[in-house]
Amino acid sequence: MQRKLMAWGALLAMLAVGIGAFGAHLLKSRITEDYMKVYETGVQYHMIHALGVILIALIVGQWGESTRLRWAGRLLIAGTILFSGSLYVLSISGIKVLGAITPLGGVCFIIGWLFLALEAFSRKTTL
Image 1 (cartoon, rainbow, N blue to C red):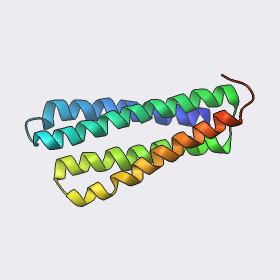
Image 2: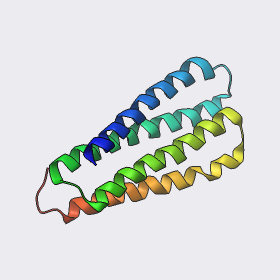
Image 3: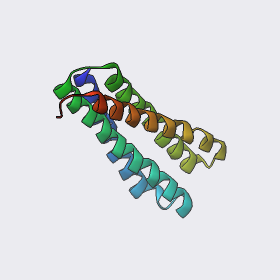
Image 4: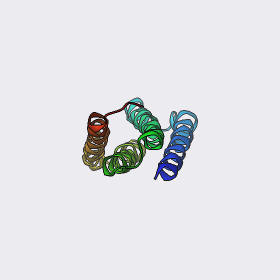
């Protein structure tokens, strides 16, 4: 589990850098300023949650595997795809209905972080 989470986190971080560079260099002159802000929000949340997945992988190495940690990682990955992915497509395509998907990703983020918190509260020892 730790190895897979670390790999997913690293891949998500790599994609965040690439997608961010794509936006900064190729999209800035092609989409409106408002859509550029939407795109940048997607990149910001993408990177933060990629680092969150890496953090969970490191915690698994200290505390061992658990169902809550597994779901925390899965939900941050799913949240990144739904939240950031919908913002990327929305900002490039202008299809506003895609904005309805974004909150689903936000819910995944919230529940993922909650699972991490619950796991931490259930532990007798710290990192």
